[in-house]
Image 1: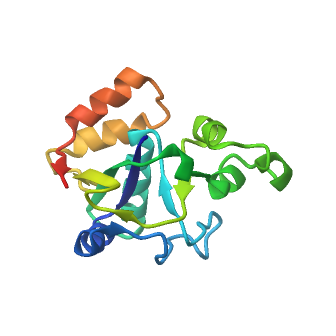
Image 2 (image 1 turned 60 degrees about the vertical axis):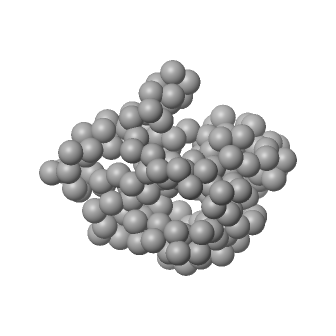
Length: 170
């Protein structure tokens, strides 16, 4: 299954050094209203959703660039994203228990996996984009358009986004 992960450029440099997206890392929102649970790599079935989070985390970290990764992994390894269901969809624990990975992806466009993801095995390619703060960059308009339309779930639209990005194969 093709999924996406967005992160800061600083994290991307570490990811490239290790050739691995690690599930145990320093988290962005530990002391915030929307914490993320350590021990997982968070993924989206929608590239625009991953780009939104990559941009958001980079702006939060005062960085001018972010990276988005394309990942191909077995569906059976995926878990529901309890954090998104709880903090974004505002569901309680009883409601969350009724969710499958499919229903989680349908509602919040997010899931997670409890293992590291390896370059060349799980991680297939990546693209580096300017954040919306980096308005002078030639690709900023594309990044801004994608982020502004982050709720779009149209399959053709999502395919178009994939074609617009400056992908680098791993």
